[in-house]
Image 1: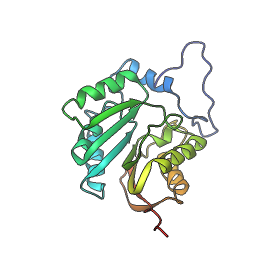
Image 2: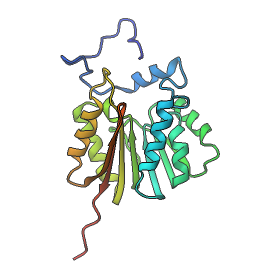
Image 3: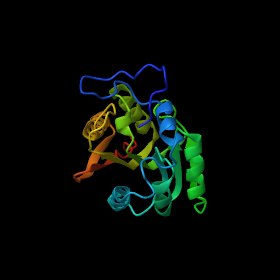
Image 4: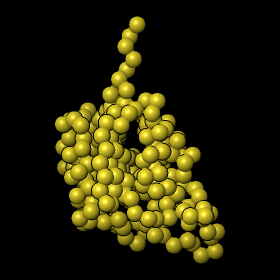
Length: 215
């Protein structure tokens, strides 16, 4: 993980050793400063298997418009392009988005946008939103804001996919806390469609409510 800058104040932590606040953009810039793929998205067997499981978990064979939140260097975004008419990837580091654009150069349906969620969010509505290995970087207040962003961005009947690692880390939330917190926060507009779990990660698929019938 990125080392604190010399003389910089250490981030506040809880009694459990977790960060008390959401990880900011500087954290991710630090991660990518010395390594192009610090989480081994392009080479890890864990990531490869998880991506395959995520694609297999998608309830529909094809989507009109997908949002990939925290797309990083675009490995999964590239795979998602074959299942969607249009895919928008979001990340917080400009150089990372350039790498994602290069990786997806053969996908004319892919585009990318710099955005630090939940404070920043793209325009438009989507029938698929993927939040993979992202929500546990947020504190509970920002997780609630992320849920509200998703609520405003889903089309009726859209699918929402959550994927999160279950290992021990210093992130503000655990994988279970992030997923369960999202599910509880979204219960007014989306319900769990299916769930699966391995020793390493959990995968939750929610479906947004259909539009209320016209009167």
